[in-house]
Length: 256
Image (cartoon, rainbow, N blue to C red; front, side, top):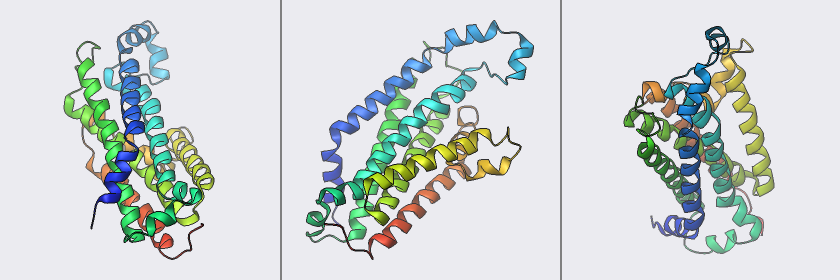
Protein backbone atom coordinates (compact mmCIF):
# COMPACT_ATOMS: atom_id res chain seq x y z
CA UNK A 1 0.00 0.00 0.00
CA UNK A 2 1.41 3.35 -1.04
CA UNK A 3 2.06 5.83 1.74
CA UNK A 4 1.49 8.84 -0.49
CA UNK A 5 -1.59 10.01 1.43
CA UNK A 6 0.22 9.63 4.74
CA UNK A 7 3.24 11.68 3.65
CA UNK A 8 1.13 14.28 1.82
CA UNK A 9 -1.09 14.76 4.84
CA UNK A 10 1.88 15.26 7.14
CA UNK A 11 3.57 17.56 4.64
CA UNK A 12 0.48 19.74 4.22
CA UNK A 13 0.01 20.05 7.99
CA UNK A 14 3.68 20.41 8.94
CA UNK A 15 3.49 24.09 9.88
CA UNK A 16 0.43 23.61 12.04
CA UNK A 17 1.92 20.51 13.59
CA UNK A 18 5.16 22.29 14.43
CA UNK A 19 3.13 25.10 15.99
CA UNK A 20 1.11 22.64 18.04
CA UNK A 21 4.23 20.83 19.22
CA UNK A 22 6.18 23.94 20.16
CA UNK A 23 3.17 25.66 21.73
CA UNK A 24 2.13 22.65 23.79
CA UNK A 25 5.68 22.04 24.97
CA UNK A 26 6.07 25.69 25.97
CA UNK A 27 2.81 25.62 27.92
CA UNK A 28 3.98 22.52 29.75
CA UNK A 29 7.37 24.05 30.50
CA UNK A 30 5.95 27.34 31.75
CA UNK A 31 3.42 25.76 34.10
CA UNK A 32 5.80 23.06 35.31
CA UNK A 33 8.36 25.76 36.12
CA UNK A 34 5.99 27.24 38.71
CA UNK A 35 6.15 24.13 40.89
CA UNK A 36 8.64 25.58 43.38
CA UNK A 37 6.58 28.71 44.04
CA UNK A 38 3.37 26.70 44.27
CA UNK A 39 5.08 24.34 46.70
CA UNK A 40 5.96 27.25 48.97
CA UNK A 41 2.39 28.55 48.85
CA UNK A 42 1.03 25.10 49.66
CA UNK A 43 3.45 24.68 52.55
CA UNK A 44 2.05 27.83 54.16
CA UNK A 45 -1.41 26.27 54.40
CA UNK A 46 -2.46 24.53 57.64
CA UNK A 47 -1.91 20.79 57.60
CA UNK A 48 -5.57 20.12 58.36
CA UNK A 49 -6.62 22.20 55.35
CA UNK A 50 -4.19 20.41 53.04
CA UNK A 51 -5.53 17.06 54.17
CA UNK A 52 -9.17 18.09 53.82
CA UNK A 53 -8.55 19.34 50.26
CA UNK A 54 -6.42 16.28 49.44
CA UNK A 55 -3.55 18.48 48.27
CA UNK A 56 -0.46 16.59 47.15
CA UNK A 57 2.50 18.96 47.44
CA UNK A 58 4.96 16.65 45.68
CA UNK A 59 6.21 17.39 42.17
CA UNK A 60 4.24 14.46 40.77
CA UNK A 61 1.12 15.57 42.65
CA UNK A 62 1.38 19.14 41.36
CA UNK A 63 1.92 18.12 37.74
CA UNK A 64 -0.80 15.47 38.03
CA UNK A 65 -3.36 17.99 39.28
CA UNK A 66 -2.55 20.92 37.03
CA UNK A 67 -0.21 20.51 34.07
CA UNK A 68 -1.09 16.95 33.06
CA UNK A 69 -4.48 16.95 34.73
CA UNK A 70 -6.04 19.92 32.95
CA UNK A 71 -3.91 21.99 30.61
CA UNK A 72 -2.00 19.52 28.45
CA UNK A 73 -4.81 16.98 27.96
CA UNK A 74 -7.08 19.82 26.87
CA UNK A 75 -4.56 20.81 24.21
CA UNK A 76 -4.09 17.16 23.18
CA UNK A 77 -7.85 16.71 22.80
CA UNK A 78 -8.18 19.89 20.74
CA UNK A 79 -5.37 18.76 18.46
CA UNK A 80 -6.91 15.31 18.03
CA UNK A 81 -10.39 16.63 17.32
CA UNK A 82 -9.29 19.28 14.82
CA UNK A 83 -7.00 16.85 12.98
CA UNK A 84 -9.60 14.08 12.99
CA UNK A 85 -12.36 16.40 11.80
CA UNK A 86 -10.22 17.60 8.90
CA UNK A 87 -9.14 14.10 7.88
CA UNK A 88 -12.46 13.12 6.27
CA UNK A 89 -15.31 15.49 7.07
CA UNK A 90 -13.29 18.63 6.36
CA UNK A 91 -12.25 17.45 2.90
CA UNK A 92 -15.74 16.14 2.18
CA UNK A 93 -17.39 19.46 2.96
CA UNK A 94 -14.85 21.36 0.87
CA UNK A 95 -15.40 19.03 -2.10
CA UNK A 96 -11.81 17.81 -2.15
CA UNK A 97 -12.47 14.28 -0.95
CA UNK A 98 -13.96 13.05 -4.24
CA UNK A 99 -10.91 14.41 -6.06
CA UNK A 100 -8.59 12.48 -3.76
CA UNK A 101 -10.59 9.29 -4.18
CA UNK A 102 -10.53 9.71 -7.97
CA UNK A 103 -6.97 8.41 -7.73
CA UNK A 104 -6.27 4.66 -7.44
CA UNK A 105 -6.88 4.74 -3.69
CA UNK A 106 -9.38 2.81 -1.59
CA UNK A 107 -11.43 4.50 1.09
CA UNK A 108 -9.91 2.18 3.67
CA UNK A 109 -6.40 3.20 2.69
CA UNK A 110 -7.33 6.88 2.81
CA UNK A 111 -8.79 6.68 6.32
CA UNK A 112 -6.03 4.52 7.75
CA UNK A 113 -3.20 6.62 6.31
CA UNK A 114 -4.73 9.83 7.62
CA UNK A 115 -5.28 8.21 11.00
CA UNK A 116 -1.63 7.16 11.12
CA UNK A 117 -0.60 10.69 10.20
CA UNK A 118 -2.76 12.03 13.03
CA UNK A 119 -1.15 9.50 15.38
CA UNK A 120 2.37 10.48 14.36
CA UNK A 121 1.46 14.11 14.99
CA UNK A 122 0.11 13.34 18.47
CA UNK A 123 3.24 11.44 19.43
CA UNK A 124 5.43 14.16 17.96
CA UNK A 125 3.71 16.76 20.17
CA UNK A 126 3.99 14.54 23.25
CA UNK A 127 7.63 13.80 22.45
CA UNK A 128 8.51 17.48 22.40
CA UNK A 129 6.65 17.96 25.70
CA UNK A 130 8.77 15.16 27.19
CA UNK A 131 12.02 16.70 25.96
CA UNK A 132 10.98 20.13 27.24
CA UNK A 133 10.19 18.82 30.71
CA UNK A 134 13.45 16.91 30.84
CA UNK A 135 15.29 20.13 29.98
CA UNK A 136 13.86 21.92 33.04
CA UNK A 137 13.65 18.86 35.31
CA UNK A 138 16.50 19.85 37.61
CA UNK A 139 16.08 23.63 37.54
CA UNK A 140 12.34 23.36 38.28
CA UNK A 141 12.93 20.96 41.20
CA UNK A 142 11.22 18.09 39.41
CA UNK A 143 14.05 15.59 39.81
CA UNK A 144 11.87 13.33 41.98
CA UNK A 145 10.11 12.35 38.75
CA UNK A 146 12.27 10.10 36.60
CA UNK A 147 12.61 10.47 32.81
CA UNK A 148 10.75 7.16 32.42
CA UNK A 149 7.84 8.41 34.52
CA UNK A 150 7.70 11.59 32.45
CA UNK A 151 7.77 9.44 29.31
CA UNK A 152 4.93 7.26 30.59
CA UNK A 153 2.73 10.28 31.17
CA UNK A 154 3.64 11.82 27.81
CA UNK A 155 2.81 8.58 26.00
CA UNK A 156 -0.60 8.61 27.69
CA UNK A 157 -0.96 12.25 26.62
CA UNK A 158 -0.40 11.20 23.01
CA UNK A 159 -2.83 8.30 23.35
CA UNK A 160 -5.67 10.46 24.66
CA UNK A 161 -5.09 12.85 21.76
CA UNK A 162 -5.18 9.90 19.35
CA UNK A 163 -8.39 8.61 20.95
CA UNK A 164 -10.23 11.88 20.40
CA UNK A 165 -8.72 12.10 16.93
CA UNK A 166 -10.13 8.64 16.24
CA UNK A 167 -13.50 9.78 17.60
CA UNK A 168 -13.54 12.82 15.30
CA UNK A 169 -12.35 10.81 12.32
CA UNK A 170 -14.89 8.07 13.01
CA UNK A 171 -17.80 10.47 13.37
CA UNK A 172 -16.64 12.37 10.29
CA UNK A 173 -16.51 9.13 8.33
CA UNK A 174 -20.10 8.40 9.33
CA UNK A 175 -21.74 11.81 8.81
CA UNK A 176 -19.33 13.76 6.60
CA UNK A 177 -20.06 17.05 8.35
CA UNK A 178 -17.35 18.90 10.23
CA UNK A 179 -19.76 20.85 12.45
CA UNK A 180 -21.39 17.64 13.66
CA UNK A 181 -17.96 16.17 14.35
CA UNK A 182 -16.91 19.15 16.46
CA UNK A 183 -20.17 19.20 18.45
CA UNK A 184 -20.15 15.46 19.15
CA UNK A 185 -16.48 15.48 20.10
CA UNK A 186 -16.94 18.47 22.41
CA UNK A 187 -19.91 16.89 24.17
CA UNK A 188 -18.11 13.56 24.59
CA UNK A 189 -15.00 15.34 25.87
CA UNK A 190 -16.86 17.40 28.48
CA UNK A 191 -19.10 14.56 29.68
CA UNK A 192 -16.29 12.01 29.98
CA UNK A 193 -13.96 14.48 31.69
CA UNK A 194 -16.64 15.28 34.27
CA UNK A 195 -17.37 11.58 34.73
CA UNK A 196 -13.72 10.86 35.40
CA UNK A 197 -13.23 13.88 37.65
CA UNK A 198 -16.35 13.74 39.81
CA UNK A 199 -16.97 9.99 40.02
CA UNK A 200 -15.45 9.83 43.50
CA UNK A 201 -17.38 12.83 44.80
CA UNK A 202 -20.65 11.38 43.48
CA UNK A 203 -19.89 8.01 45.09
CA UNK A 204 -20.20 6.45 41.63
CA UNK A 205 -16.77 5.03 40.92
CA UNK A 206 -18.13 3.12 37.92
CA UNK A 207 -18.42 6.43 36.05
CA UNK A 208 -14.64 6.70 35.93
CA UNK A 209 -14.41 3.46 33.94
CA UNK A 210 -16.27 5.01 30.99
CA UNK A 211 -13.97 8.03 30.91
CA UNK A 212 -10.83 7.98 28.72
CA UNK A 213 -9.31 10.46 31.15
CA UNK A 214 -9.37 7.81 33.86
CA UNK A 215 -7.18 5.57 31.72
CA UNK A 216 -5.05 8.55 30.75
CA UNK A 217 -4.07 9.65 34.26
CA UNK A 218 -5.94 7.54 36.82
CA UNK A 219 -3.00 5.17 37.19
CA UNK A 220 -0.73 8.13 38.05
CA UNK A 221 2.08 7.47 35.56
CA UNK A 222 4.12 10.30 37.08
CA UNK A 223 4.40 8.17 40.22
CA UNK A 224 3.95 4.64 38.93
CA UNK A 225 5.38 4.70 35.42
CA UNK A 226 3.80 2.85 32.50
CA UNK A 227 0.32 1.49 33.15
CA UNK A 228 0.04 -1.04 30.36
CA UNK A 229 -3.58 -1.97 31.03
CA UNK A 230 -4.75 1.64 30.81
CA UNK A 231 -2.71 2.20 27.66
CA UNK A 232 -4.23 -0.89 26.07
CA UNK A 233 -7.74 0.40 26.72
CA UNK A 234 -6.93 3.71 24.99
CA UNK A 235 -5.38 1.92 22.01
CA UNK A 236 -8.26 -0.53 21.61
CA UNK A 237 -10.89 2.19 21.97
CA UNK A 238 -9.16 4.24 19.26
CA UNK A 239 -9.04 1.24 16.93
CA UNK A 240 -12.73 0.48 17.49
CA UNK A 241 -13.76 4.06 16.69
CA UNK A 242 -11.77 4.04 13.46
CA UNK A 243 -13.10 0.63 12.39
CA UNK A 244 -16.73 1.60 13.09
CA UNK A 245 -16.35 4.84 11.15
CA UNK A 246 -14.59 3.08 8.30
CA UNK A 247 -17.32 0.45 8.03
CA UNK A 248 -19.91 3.17 7.47
CA UNK A 249 -17.65 5.27 5.24
CA UNK A 250 -17.15 2.37 2.84
CA UNK A 251 -20.91 2.02 2.34
CA UNK A 252 -22.23 5.54 2.03
CA UNK A 253 -22.34 8.10 -0.76
CA UNK A 254 -19.91 10.99 -0.42
CA UNK A 255 -21.30 14.52 -0.43
CA UNK A 256 -19.99 16.39 -3.47
